Length: 279
Image (tube, rainbow, N blue to C red; front, top):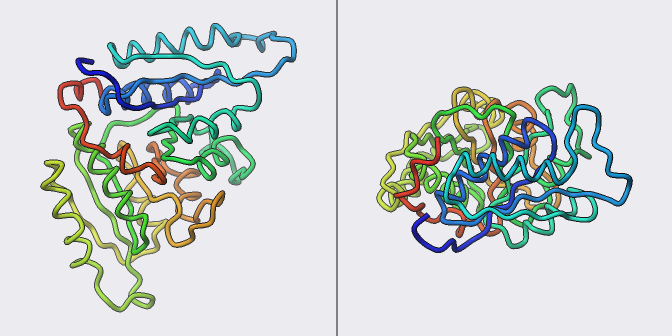
């Protein structure tokens, strides 16, 4: 990187394949957004014997640092050992991070959505934007789902900034139920998208779909490189995920970003010269 980093991205580290992808994703995002990367691993004072075939905490962090530097050479990388639960550590650091990146915990393999899981709890309760990635993060366009809530603008800003940094396509998806909304949302949506296209230099494909929001976004997620949502939508209750967010965390084949809080900072136009380190 040829300029001083001006923010922090935190990636959670454990021994899962999804966590390794979270580290690589965090490194690439740090390069794009001119941030430093912090790799966080939580521990307690029980005997530090690694599980069979696994790594101890120091070795995990060493491997994570190597993964990060391989994904985005030049990004400043630091490590943090947090005494306590991973949930507590990630939630604490999310208060100052522009972006928190975690693995999906294998949610797609679960029959039911485990609301008590680390992934769900951090996604629901983090102070800032959270990006949740599966073990294999596909390449593809950025998809952002919007509605009539106040968080839609934040989600749009984040999606445009990310698409610009990745040199990726962008699709804006708005589900419309004529029974609930008589007014066609297209004019308002196009009015919101236009200035962002000019600001970020990204041409968006805008789709208004007469379908359930969950179904519309599950369909759009196929082939996407990232799906972006406002974290709280129409139901801004702290610590709870909306139904659409829960559905995507459980079923999306692509990484999911839940935008909240400090999204205005994490959506800033990325540093063009380092954009090549992202897929």
